[in-house]
Length: 136
Image 1 (cartoon, one colour):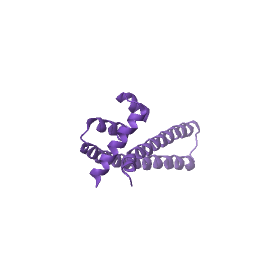
Image 2 (cartoon, rainbow, N blue to C red):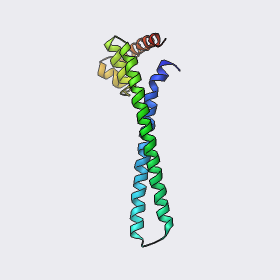
Image 3 (tube, one colour):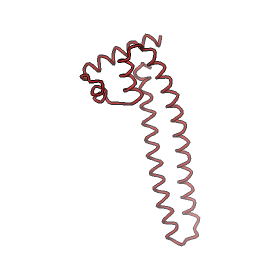
Image 4 (tube, one colour):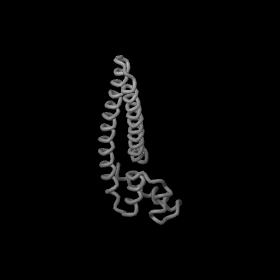
């Protein structure tokens, strides 16, 4: 795994967390709809209750997965912070933090640092080359 791939793991985990949060939101909306349907229809059927239980179980399972992913993300970000701190150049540190901890786009980083995109890429390459040296 390259340094860049290693650093990019945090972004991928963050994406998975957001995806699962969206799934939980959707399931909660479904549960609310099912609850209102249950209360609207005076039915003592167990089918609707079992469906509702299934939705609740899925929500709980997803929330547990989200908790695990968040723990992984926090641990990985701590490792990345430790790596970035090895780079003594504050300009390089800032760029690496903006990209791999704050998940900023290249355009956002260039704008915030008042650089051109090309200069931002050059700094990034230099910073990654330093990280490669420290990783050995």
